[in-house]
Image 1 (tube, rainbow, N blue to C red):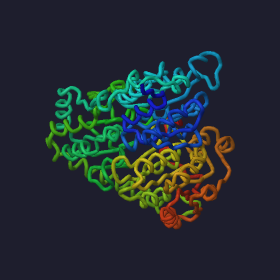
Image 2: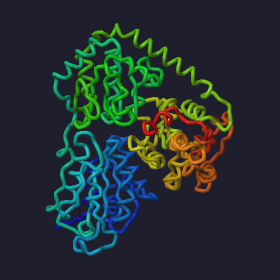
Image 3: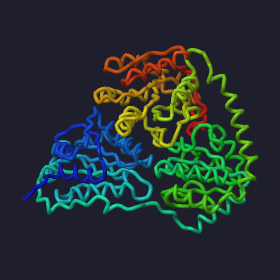
Image 4: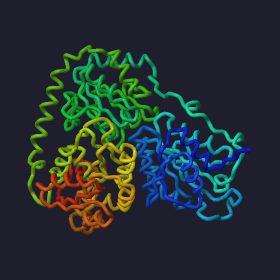
Length: 552
């Protein structure tokens, strides 16, 4: 009679889900999973901190569309991963965290690293459970995957006690769901009457606008979104992972005029992004406009702000259906509206040009992010990890295609950069990766730069170094004055280029803006993980930082 252990059942279930990589930090509670993964041909990437493992699993999901997996030990191993899980939860990113636990035979006896992991994880996951028996291991893993994709996606958590994981059961007594027979399509269109209603609203609109959010990428809906924009002839703004849906220079794509457009629009369509702090909780939309919300999550629709129409389902399916139903009715009448926005966009670009082209030292952040934008190509994954410096980049950097922008998401978690780089290079080794870090953000998970070196994962990293937590510093100075405003916000000058060199990567320091592009080129040509340490002006603050809701 063939027997199989719990760890090998985990690996078989992961293999059925198409998992080819797990991110982990070792611990005695979980080693049988490693043994199973080796047998199933699943790559094991071991990191230096469990938060990195969780962020990397999240990043892997964002890049591939498949559920990323992190495996950590019990107690502090699991609690170290909490931040990564919480970030994925707010970003609606599907991932599975598997955590160890003491043996069932030692339940409530004070075993090593024993904590109520499931209770801790329930508020920040779509599904959290302990696995009660070895025969149920694979079944519970597939259940966790299924729940991660129930409605808007998100993370799941499984705790597996050590004796459950190590024990063996007869293979025929272990339920191993067959791949492709326990998960089905979630591409729902919602109520067809609502599709017709939205088509009618758009047909009458003279100055409509659409905002494409992260769910457009979640649903891999760039083609449908583009067809919708071109057919309806509607100006498009993009945020979060929705950036890059339309390429730079597209006649329907806009970046700087969102507030102007929202103030003047007669119809505003919000796709796949909530009315959270980034949207002023809905208050930034004109009160006289007809507001339509399209989202995968019913609980998001109409939250924080009344709307005129809500559609729940796969945003790509909905946009495609609306394009078919609306056709080109009224499209010609919108040409003056697009021309008005294009003129305003040009005016704002001209207004900030002196800062973008500034030769000042310390280097203006606008100049740095401009040089990075010019460095990107059609095959570059851009990753932003920081506060004020990434806010600057959001106004300038234009990813060249769908899915090529990654940032922490609405939780605002710093420290995602190195693990996102790790995930992006493992998932798409053919792709160039450029990561922009704030100096504070890099310090949170930066030691896993060594993991990138060890696994030969080259990328171009840039640290915008102002030796300060400037996104918080601005508001603190505004509230308490300069003397108290710097408290807790100033850091020492760190030579990150030397840190990279110490760990076996490429490092270079830049103090003159004309040297930025050559340094980026040398970093890419090195074929190594790299850090270009760029000294930027600590007294320059992004418009986004100066306008943050928390300072009002």
